[in-house]
Length: 403
Ligand SMILES: Cc1cc2nc3c(=O)[nH]c(=O)nc-3n(C[C@H](O)[C@H](O)[C@H](O)COP(=O)(O)OP(=O)(O)OC[C@H]3O[C@@H](n4cnc5c(N)ncnc54)[C@H](O)[C@@H]3O)c2cc1C
Image (cartoon, rainbow, N blue to C red; front, side, top):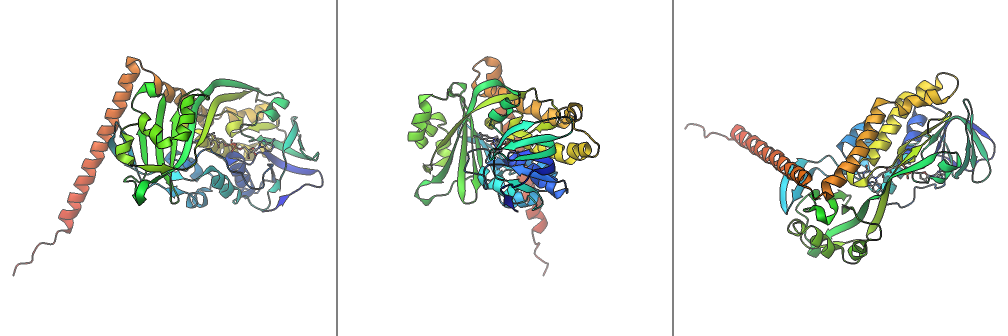
């Protein structure tokens, strides 16, 4: 795939601004559909970044619809089986549906699937002028590119959006904090679980859960807490991760045993939504449209849903007729699949936070109900597995032949 510095004014059907997960996926899909596309991003290779580190079953199902699942999943690590635990007790061992992959190789794998016909421009977009027919994008090096449609996929960088008159509504400041680190068992032991989700015991702990999942030969940990970004606990956690983790979730010690922790990444996340987006010539996707709570794990699902609907349904339809007015583009924002996904993501962000931190009786009851439901599902699964294995041993038992 050619990465180019531009020399002359280029004219494209679609120009995508931002080559993160959403923008790179869109470039790969549009390029494969034969749509004349350019992708603008300052980095040739996506740089190291702590973001989404696994794709779950729902996300993989949407990824299948992009036609790009197979090579992306090949670069990821399937967890095979995932244990669910609370209060030091394993309540379920469910079939694995998580695929672990660090964000940087995820995005770079997607970029590797962008066909050579897609023009890749290593620059920042600094200005966008939109109209009902033709859009003009000015780049950081002063050059310009025109297109019938701009796809704005520039993630958390709100500056460009504000420049073109869009606004950001902060829905929840520091909604949650994500903590990512590698863990390895001490003294060359092995963790007993292939992957583990461990829920916090008490709402006063202001933590949602920790997930442990394999990426290649590494066991990765993602811990999600609800604290102020300056809370001293975060500093203490960075200094003594094992001690602080076992103090937060004492029952985890029994399951993990002693472990060594790798470098700690801590990242607070605001929930925000971009406003004023119904405009001619430009469509917003992924985090550029709105963010999600990492604890709820819906960001990749939102980005995937946006790209799948946009590239499979809306862009081919829009390009088939002249013009690119606001009404035409509104069909994407009104897409019932996209709306349901966005609504689910926002509702889950608030619901998980309340579920994890509310000390009132109704929420304590809900937490217990969930724990009991998970235990019941786990118990049923164990019974089914036992009955399958006894059927198997009956079917394969060789009766002694009469002499
Ligand atoms: C700590 C953390 C943990 C997370 N964990 C999970 C999880 O477990 N599960 C989950 O589903 N989601 C998770 N998410 C959310 C998920 O990672 C994001 O929703 C998703 O990565 C957004 O992708 P994107 O393409 O919209 O943005 P990005 O990947 O941020 O891409 C934006 C791109 O735009 C480029 N850009 C910016 N400005 C310009 C410009 N002016 N011109 C050109 N290019 C520009 C940048 O270089 C970048 O390449 C997490 C997020 C965070 C922060």
